[in-house]
Structure formats: structure tokens, C-alpha cells
Length: 335
Image 1 (cartoon, rainbow, N blue to C red):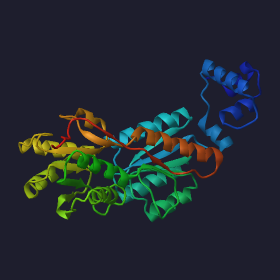
Image 2 (spheres, rainbow, N blue to C red):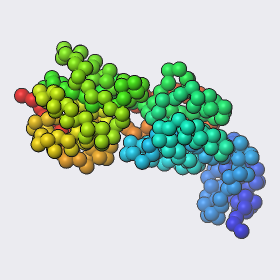
Image 3 (cartoon, helix red, strand yellow):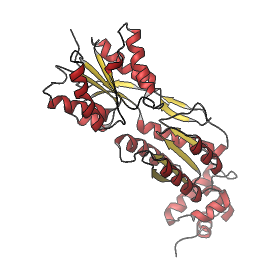
Image 4 (cartoon, rainbow, N blue to C red):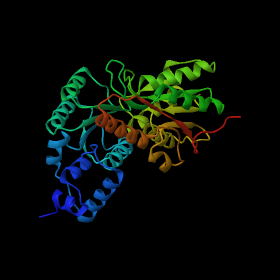
């Protein structure tokens, strides 16, 4: 049998109630006492019983995280930030891969409710009325990441997608490009579809460049395949195009692959800029210039906000995270 809370209290020369308050982050002890107790816990290798702690604090020390595609590089960066921070704050993470399927999402929400998670981080999907009502029934704090809702008052952590897309398009313009195409996600996607198209159009408009709807290729996702399939359509219909803004790095690399197959050299004959700054951007040949989202930090901030809501019982302010251009080797300066 392992060490008990009584063993910790005896060795630290405090009461079991004090040890319990420290473990459950409740007040009533000095900083020195906490340090002494935590040192004894480490020395003895004491593992608090999660169920017993939950009875006292009404918390299970677990949070649920929902991703539409947990295997993507985009999701993994955010998840790393969430997990590292949650573990530092004493919580474990239950990860749910929804596959953008409404029934699966509802099933996972019900599972998280049964597991009595302390809070939920909802990532990269549209927050439907059904999801929102279920989350409210759970009566736990919720933070949105890489998505937001005007209809439902939940705090979010995200980049300003319209502004970031504007920045990417403006970068191409400032490098002398005026014939710029865009590879987008779904036209009706209010998260990463429409706002990024709006940013692209706004930049063209502000610099007096005509906007042509045929210069935008809409797809059903943000993956390598969508970029690979979209670029040949641009090359065929718009041979005068000198630059492409892709709404994700995976799309951009897919477009680069298609360009290579068509004998088009990057950046000498075509410039490409991506969006996200995933690891694949550094690994591509040539390395991809992109507009960066601080994905790890977004996960980190979301976990901290959720913890603050749990600790204080009050709401928190949403966070718009900074974005910036990462210059590599896929954008040529026009003379």
C-alpha cells in the first residue's frame, strides 16, 4: 500500500485538513507550509485519490477537448499547448476527435458529461445551437479556440482571421504582385472560410486591385489534397497569376506539389504564401513563407482561461492572439 494523506501530514507536521486544503487549492495556510507539504508529497511519492479529492472540491481534475481532426498538424500544436498547461495546473485531458460529425460530437459531449469533466475546450468548429445547449446543461466553463460565436457568449482564443488574411495578401502586393489568386476553404464556413476571403478581398480593394471572383477557388477543406487539386484549375483558367494565397499551409504545400508536376518553378514563376506556420512549412521544398498563428500559445492561453474560470467562478475576457509573417523562400519580389 502506498503512502496516505495521514503519512504526508505526519511527516510535514501538519493536520490532514491542511494537506487536503493544499491539494484542493483552498485557502488557510502559509506559503511556507505549502512548500513544506509539497516537498513531502514529492519525497513520499504520494498520489492523491482523484475520487476522494473530487468529493471535497467537486472537481475531477479533468478537462475535455474537442477537435474536428486530432491528427492534423494544426490540432497537434494547439493540443500540445493545452496539455502542457493543464498538467502544470494539475489537470488531465480527455481528447475527443469529432471528425466534424454532428452525431459524434454530441456523443462525445455526453461522454464528457458522464465523466464529470471540470471544463471543456471546444476547437475549430462552428458552435451550433445543439452543442451550446448541451454544454450549458453540463454546467461547466467552456472556452472556444480558433473559433468564435457572436450568438453565444462564450470566451474564445483566436487570431483575427480577416486581419491575418489581409496581412498575407498585403505582403504579396508589397512584393509587387497584382495578379493574386486564392485557395479557400468552404465559402459558407464562418470560421476560416469567409473571414479569410474577406481579408483577401479587402487588401486587394485597399490597394486598388480589381477583385475577380474567378480568382478564388473554394474547396471542402484545408488539407494537402485540396491545394493539390485546386492549383491546376488556377493554372488553366488564370495563366497570368503570379502569386497564390492559400488559406492553410497544407493547402499551400499541396499547391506547390501540383505546380511542380506542371513544371512551374517556385518562386521564380509563381509565388505562394500559406497560413498557420505549421512544421510542414519549414519542411517543404522550398520552405514556405506563411502568416503565423501562435497555435501552441493559443492552447496554453485557453487552458489558463479555463483554469481561471474554475478557480474564480467568474467569466474571462476573450483573447485575440497576434499573427505575423514568417518569411522563407516561396515569395519572389517582382521588379
